[in-house]
Amino acid sequence: MIKGLYEAHLPVKNLDKSIAFYEKLGLKMAWRDEDTAFFWLEEGKSWLGLWEGNEYQTPYHPSLRHIAFRVSYEDLKESLKWLDSIGVEGVPFGGRESIEPFVRPHQGNASVYFNDPDGNSLELMCYVEVPDKLKHIKEKLSFEDWEKLVGIEV
Image (cartoon, rainbow, N blue to C red; front, side, top):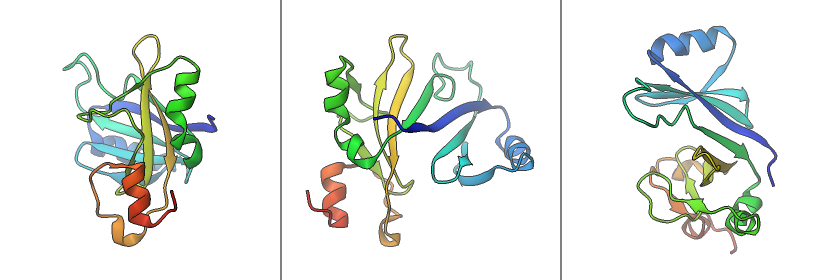
């Protein structure tokens, strides 16, 4: 199921300063928002997420205890069955109540979350091809809703 690393994260104090540093290293920016920036490690395969903020302000900073593994779209669709078969429970992400995999059209990826025995956040993640007309969608979509939207036979 796991094909490689999708993303790793680091906390940073000053996002602009860190962006300049990683650009000097030759990394290409994938995307940025207000307090995060993602650089390609292997374009189209894996990236490094930089998260601005004081990691000591909260007991959990997402950049300190989270990695994502790259999987295929088809494997992600079956991920909860696979996790269940090895005795691992999926967990909701953010404010979601569902543990079901979901698609982020504006980022072009899809995910499902679970924890390791120490409570570290782990994620199975894949890329999704997003038609230009759907790249504005910021909400997280179920696979069923996503596939209806893009016309994939379910």
